[in-house]
Length: 226
Image (cartoon, rainbow, N blue to C red; front, side, top):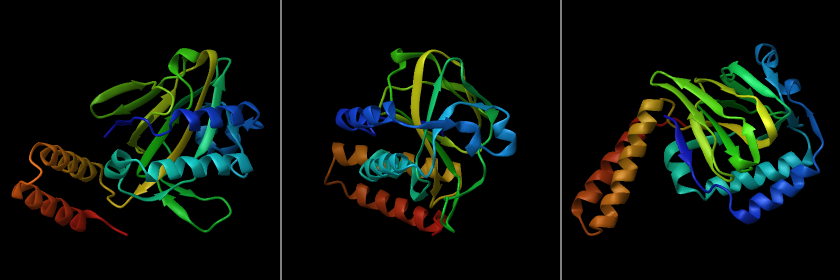
């Protein structure tokens, strides 16, 4: 499932982050990549231990916790602390697949990467190139969203970032361990949840809404793991 999550960050949050990132101490992004990915990765990144990365990442996680579509779609168990990258001057990231397990630096905690997320921090007209290309069984999608919007997709997908030939592309990226590991099951639950919400808008007193909600939660009990 590839899903755009709109308006994760509001205008004030974006302005705060953009101002902070303009003054950031960027490092070579290959330092944080695995051996194979490092050969394809050419960008700049905030160091994971940078206090700025922790501050901005905390703000993003707090925004996600308030976003109903993200909660419905991801059913998050753990969110890897958001990271930040910058592409400019022809930089790109070749085809790769994200590591299945990520350890949170400085802790014993590990996150199974069921979902990958890219949160765009500047608008498409500010740069050329920089599309996130995601490949799956249904084909290839090119993603380039407005500032504040986020794309959510299976971490098992082969993906890449095309060269940025003008301006700079700023984004946050991270991974989610879901309570529901299977992508198809998550999609079924999301479709059912959205259908229940639409039915509630159309007929809030309908007894069928209670019945459908019961089905939703029984499926969630069956498929969810702690």
